[in-house]
Length: 317
Image (cartoon, rainbow, N blue to C red):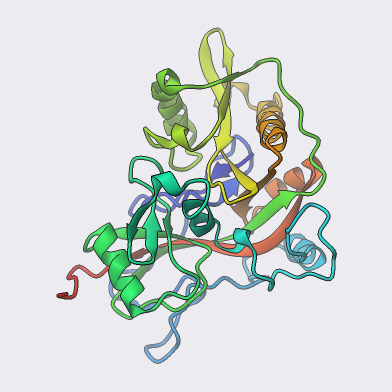
């Protein structure tokens, strides 16, 4: 299910978006060096540099756009009143920040108001909702000069000395009637399984799974003849919510429904804690969106996943 869409080989993989279970990830787009593009749209030198994605971007299919329009309620809970819209502030609007200032605070590396996960855990960095010039300086200092920084859902202005290197429009989906179920064949994966997990990720490209990613939450796997052939787990953890991610299936066993079973099994563990599952996927991936809707997820909002390169020379403090 939530196999993550990577960026191009020239940029770090964008780990927020997800593709169809077992499918090859869709690459993002890149901007040639020296251009003044944005994650939202291209710009002239005088245009505002924003990283926003259209609520119903042109790259989305008609079905997806209609589904988004029909499901624009804020996910305060699976039973949120329809009158509430995605314009209402919510922890899922900035899930990395909510996680790093909440249940995942013990992972947080901080500089000023900017936080990130350790680089061997997950690439995500969290900006404040309205970053100022000092915040962007802190991002550059935290990441390092010339480093490509993954940005999840950021829809604001970027400084002129930053370069957008990749963008993917996405959607955020939340549990709105998922029927979770433990799976008798699924086993909990631990540190000893990480080499096999890394190998499966390398072969299926669901997005970044790093040596310490397993520390973010519970990961379940299915083995056949002793070999790990499918897995899924938990990533971002805003208060009351847990993201399902890293769902991938060995090509040899695709079509057996293993990804769906693992999604429901991971959802079962999340629900047992009194929390609600959510996930991200590519906005143009109508097949995946329809699958997730069939499992009981609904579209909450559109978003954007991208990377931007920090200035190669940092300002002198």
